[in-house]
Structures are given as structure tokens and as C-alpha cells.
Length: 308
Image (cartoon, rainbow, N blue to C red; front, side):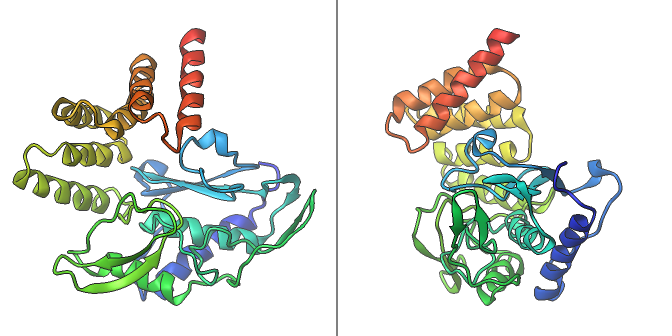
């Protein structure tokens, strides 16, 4: 990969150690030789284009790294400046990007609004682009803030932490226990899904909560949708389709389930069903914020169908 050097892998390992150190061992990592046994896989790209990653990169002016939660979770790190591919990143850049993306992979699926946090969206050291000097408001010099540490501890320290999802942009929120006592607070700049991205914990936590709710509310189409999302994020697309279709059978106007079905069918290479569900989603939500992105995805899938 252009711009890559072997020292970058060392910086990723350094970032993993930093998360372990600052959480006092609450999270830990080991390097495995067989990627089929990995919970997290790190790979590299010369440039990460928003359009290549569909929905995950929306809301960013450009992308330094991206994390796909799932089984396994995949982290992709850029080796060059996203606006100038001839400008390679340095080791400190890679270290900071790694810290940030590892935070996502551990379950901090939000961005904070405090520039001292590593989970702040524009966390990279100011750099020069073809348009001149770009000054980024950033007070983080390559370390985890108290907020970063308290948030990850809040997620991992208590079994009864509520899973937060679909939080509004720019909303100050609190992490609550089921007895409503406050254990921490975060500020979001995008959607939040505070769930642990490992093969066992993520599936058990998210699925367990949704199934428990479903027992009390057997006709909850939202619960079926949430269960479908858990399977979708864990790459179990057949079960995702099963539960998402159940949500639609209860409420045929539930737009979110059609969008998620589009994702699931796309992963199963059933492009016809993916297109159909995306189109149904747009019919129900013509003013959805991701309308342009979904329309582009529909055109991409139609082209794939034509080529095949």
C-alpha cells in the first residue's frame, strides 16, 4: 500500500497497549496469527473514500480511518492524507488514528464534542493540504482523556449498562443503569451504539436485551428490528433477514426494517431483494437524511445486477 511502512503496525500495537494501560487491564488484547480467530482485524488503504463505505462515513468532511462493527470487527486505516494522497502520514498520525478507531471497536460508537478527547471526530494533528493550511480545533496530543477512559469503563464495568442506540446528533446524553443512576455522560455528534464489538460479548449483550424486551412485548416490531440488527452486525445475514421480515410482518410501514433488509440482502448478494427493500424504505421515508446515499447504492446494485 503506498505510504505504508512497517513502523505503522508498531503504532497500532502501541495504541492497543495504551487502551489496556489506561483501563487498568479492563480491556486487553493478544495478537493472533490466524485472522479467522481474530475479533478485530486491522488493514490499510492509501485513501479511504466516503463513497466506498456507504453509510458509515457520512457526516465527515474526509476519513482517516473507519471501523465496521461485526464478527470480526474490521478497522481500515489510511496511509496517506485523505485530501492529498502524495502526502504520507507519519507514525504519530497513525498512532492517534489507531487510538480513535480502537475506541470504536471496543464499543464507543459515538463521537464526543470535547477536542481533548481521542473520540473527538477531528482528532488528527493539523496538516497542510493542496488548498493551504488546514487548522483543526484539536487539543489532544495523542492520549486518552478522562472522558474517554470513564466512558469505556462505564461500558465494561457494569453488566446492567443500557445499550444506547440511534442518538441524535449534537445531543448531550447520560449513560444510565437500569436503576436510573448516572454512571457517566457523553456528548454525541452522530449515532451511538454503545455495544462491545467482540464475538461473544456483543452478541450476548445486544441479543439478550432485545430478547428480554420481546418477552414482555411480543408484538414489538422494534424489538424484532433490533434483533435483526444484532445478527446483521455479526454477519449472520440469514437470521437478520428472518427477524427483520418479522418486524415488517407486524408493521409493514416500519421504514428502518426495510433499510436494514436492504443491507442484509446486499450482503447475501441478493441484489434484487436489496433494491426492492431500499426502494420501499425511500417510499416510506422520502426525506430521510441518507436518501442520496441510498439512491447511489440502488444504482450500484442495479449495475451489478446488469453486469451479472
